[in-house]
Structure formats: C-alpha cells, structure tokens
Length: 369
Image (tube, rainbow, N blue to C red):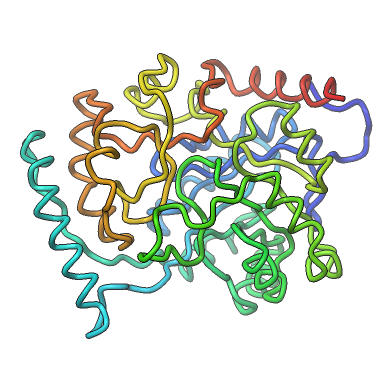
C-alpha cells in the first residue's frame, strides 16, 4: 500500500520515495539483498550494510540488489576510526583488552573455541567507494564518524548520490552539515544495534548521551546550522509502527529509519536463535553494552551482556575477540551468548514477508492523526 498522492513522501537530494520509511542497514547478517529489494518494491528505501564486508563481497551484494529490480536502494559504510591500542598512548587500552581476553577465555571454553585475535581492521572505505562508483545506489550513508568534505564530494562526483550521516547529538549534526552532508540520520538512545557515536568515550558508561529520538530530532531540526543549510533529518531509534513514523514527521523529520521491526521479516538474514528470542520474548529488556564488540550497542539483555558490564571501549578488537564465541553460540542455538541487537520497540516485532510489514506500516502511517 502506498500513499495516494503522486508526490513523494520522502525526498533527500535526488532521492524520492513513496513512503517515508527506510529499512536500516543491519550489518552482520540481518540485511540481505532480498530484504533491501522488498522494501524498495513496497515504496520505502532498503539499505545494504557494508560494515565488516570486503569490497568484493559488497560488489556481489550490490549486483544482487540491482538484479532484483529498478527500485532505489542505499548503502551504509562504517568509518574506520582510530586504533586505540596503537602507539605508546594505547598501553592502557591494550591492558584492558588483555584483561578482557582472559575473562572471555572462560566463555570460549564453554563453547569449545578459542578467543579471537584482538586486531584492528580497516573498513576499506576507499575500495568500497570504488565499488559503488560502478553501481547506482540512491543514497550513501556513513556511521561512526565525520565523513569530512573530501569523502562527501567523492560520493557526489563518482557515485552521484546524496550522503546521509548518522549523528547522535546536535554537535555531531553541525559538524556533518559543515562537511557537506545531504541528510542527517538522527539516532536516539532507543535504537538497536551499534550507537552511531563519533567517539565512544571509554571514561563514560556505555551508550554516551542518553538522548531520546524525539528530543534529538526536535533539537536538530531547530538548530540554526541545520535549518540554514536546509538539511533534511531522518529519525532513527524506537520507531516501530506507522504512527511512530508520523510522529517523527510532526517533529520536523522527513522520514524514519526502522531496523528492529524488520529483524524477523522472511527476507532478513537474522539467525534462528535471535529470531526466537525476539518472537518468544525470551528476555525481559534491552541494555546498551560494549560486551560484544567494544562499541556501545543495544541488545536484548541476555547472560553475556549481564556478565560483562565493564567491557573495554576498544572497537573492533573486542568484536574480533568475541566473534568465535558468538558464532559457536549461534550454531548451537545458545541465545544467551549472542549479540541479540534490538531497539526498545522490540516487543512489537512480528514474522512474515517484508511486503506485509511495509503494507501495515503504510496503513498505520496514513491512518495516524
């Protein structure tokens, strides 16, 4: 179901969609070409997640999406950031990583695996941009930092797509605008998965500023820098139905990005243990934790998250250390040891085709006061 009006419901640069709904890029498996295409076919915008992928793997996924039809799609890039363990200044962080590695050895032994090597890996952004220059994404978004003007200009010139930047504060929004961002993804504290913080301060509790999505959207949409540059804002975090999308538009957003709502779609690549935990409501709540990756992220509050509340803020080293544990747990169906990413609206998650979910969201959006 699509809005009756011929006018686009969401516009970001040259991108126009019939519905103001973006399916969030969910790295690590949940986002698939089939899901991206299904959302685009239904009038929204599906986003491929390029995080953790090689450039070659990304090219295969992009080609797969484009083979499924002419609908617009986007691609999200993780920015690499800095290696906190490098050089003399990284001694403290290296010590924290080694201490956590010893703790994780107990978890690993239960699953018959070894703790992964705590290495820093680059996201190969340059190589991925080269891949995208050979294809036709309608939007490129970035997460974990300021893309800076050179990257934005490269996307404009080589790919011909607008750039959306994930921000978690007004300060980040202002910096993104100064770098030339065409849109801002305003991610509130309710969002599932990794927080888009530009700097995950090791001295602070996991999560950083706990700004609700509605408050963040309102503040960014009222900021002089953003308003003067006429940069559209997309709300992300805690939106789980069409009425929630409508409420974000009332605050000044041009659309909403939903991720958790799509985790149990038929086309999603979400693992079976993760699906069961959501649909059977195995756990009572969510928590923002660094336990799984070394970066603040919202997960269902399972045993692993509870056992490691003080995991170091060292990403992606912690991600690589826990990866064998998480993989073994997923293979055996042990949800208590898996990163069960989920936003605060997780209780409303349902299974079924993405087309049915999009139709319901559209109906709720149109019926909302």
